[in-house]
Image (tube, rainbow, N blue to C red; front, top):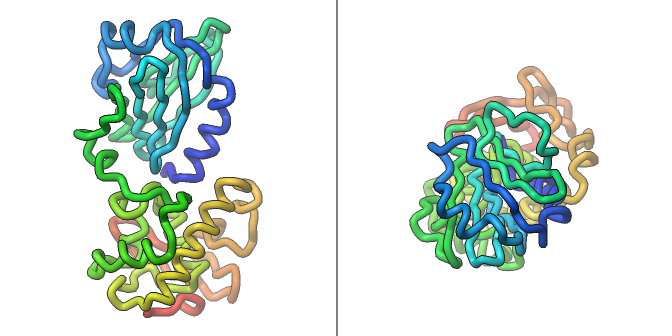
Length: 265
């Protein structure tokens, strides 16, 4: 499942090359999921340069100097990547943006989402989740008091449900939600209403710490023997105390926790 650190690494791999470059040709491989016809592509994208590449939660946004944006819904396994124009597209290819130098920016996704939208100006209204997207977990706006305030309106939710709620905090998926709860030593199935402000502040602290490290030092984080994310399999033990991990279903996702290190509220 695509999560915020994966999208950050993805953008880092192509943004330096694509920013400032003019798109010469737009190739639409999946017309059912790409909200863009040939006429709009020719008018707003072909012959226009990419101004900036941005991330909004788990969405990738290409802003063009023609004052339009292409929005990529990453779904569960979406990928935006650079490729040679001579390489055949994947079966799951959605759209390809060609540059004059012989490379192209491709978007592929086999998930049920994976849609592509053309937005004129800065109006993201009407895009469902994106229109109501919560704060970015790495933004300066998400302070501990703000996180506690947001949690206060979701008291009946589990802690994991709160972390994965895109309208509260954008971009946290299943594995990193488990990691945040583990690092904060709190069970993910705790009701938010049962947590103290001190506990919620601790969750906020590790939310930012875990995602920042996974974004900046992905390989090191995923090789860290102290991280739960590297042991999320049946029969494996806690990286701290070696107690066998507990597995349960929360918000429709397989959840792992240590019954000894992670306490109830």
